[in-house]
Image (cartoon, rainbow, N blue to C red):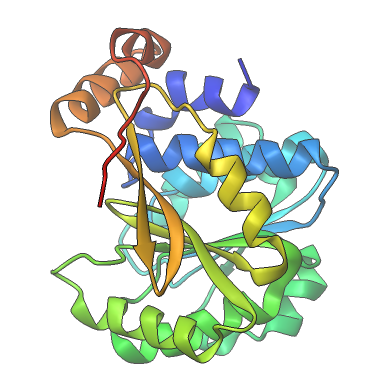
Length: 261
């Protein structure tokens, strides 16, 4: 088992935060795939919160001797101390940089200077239109040629402006960027030069945990839709808190759904 997935199965869900198991495993597979290709680069996240997904990125950075940068206001009481403790306990501090600031106040050149061109950029900051208008550009201009952007809460009805901003951004950049995968909570985007590679690779991902895969269309492109039923997600997260996520994966096998449209 890959070390990143071992972390997801054993310790990730002991950390405060929000990331569905389907996305946690997708993060692992994409990051592992990049490492296997010899594609290096920094890792970045806007919206660290309590550090659950950031710790996963930091573990990937540690494996390849890179650095993960986390951008967050850290304005919740006790938040920064909690994140620092998580990174220390996971022995990740040397591979991370935390920037206590608004993403509106950091430039792509600042990100690149700190960690290099980014191979995986998680965008999970402010969910209003003006936040995404800034963060989409920040992520794109920080990205390595082989990099991936993951937009959180895409198509979440609670945050309609977020989806509008991301779709407008993709339409404006349709000649350079393309979505290749989508889950119930995130949209995964890459440079168009790497769309075929990521799309094909994602189509071969078998994630376990009862996660189904289906081909769908977004902006006239085929993307891989990954979905985990609520019951399977609940079982996985409960067992993973006790270090037994691998048991949950075996109990709920892989499935790929085929539909005639």
